[in-house]
Image 1 (cartoon, rainbow, N blue to C red):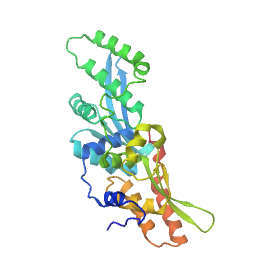
Image 2: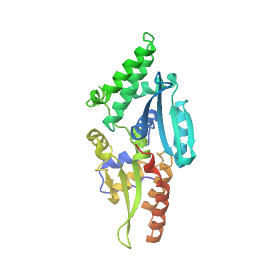
Image 3: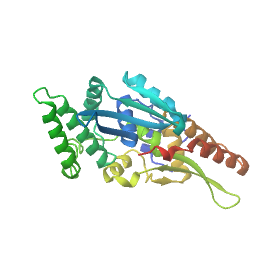
Image 4: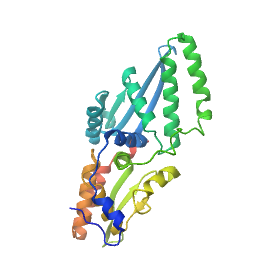
Length: 281
């Protein structure tokens, strides 16, 4: 049951109790904005190109990648046990096309470089698909794009970016890796709850869009009434290990825990978060 802080606006409290109309594709774009990698490799004596879209997570968060694979219906998952990582990747041409079409419909915008990398990746994909070019002509065009790509794309943004808007599904996907729910000690007898959006300062557009959803500056939040809003707003929303982290955090926020109980909760959440920084991009 939703528990809103009494001092929040009625609009904010209503927003927190509104059922989530989950959109997987918007969630997937948010997740990619936080974690996606577009890989361009040259193989076989520098005459063949390999394109691969990848999402990398700590092995303890493998289920979120299986969730993605199940909903997209394609891609492969490999485990790198020695590095405690699991990788979801797409490399088949027909599957890459579907993903590229999706990124055209819902552009990446958390960081400008995300879209730049995607656009360069897509440009090379289209060159490789051209039937009117020989292998050497394709290689020349790709070399030219790679050489000029970074500089030419530095001010490039998607044409429909200003018409884009951040949805709750997008934000949930983004927070699967960029959200941080944690507890922090304040002296020897006090522990407080906090919520943080990692990378919030990297995009003014992202800040503007998030401010339309969350009724306060969400970079680092420790106000109890704002945290209650967060607890209600994201209830039953996350798909990966963030769901467990959030549930433990949220329960301890709402319960009247003593210092010893809060300390145990803090240690448990910190163990869940171990290794996260290793694969964040």
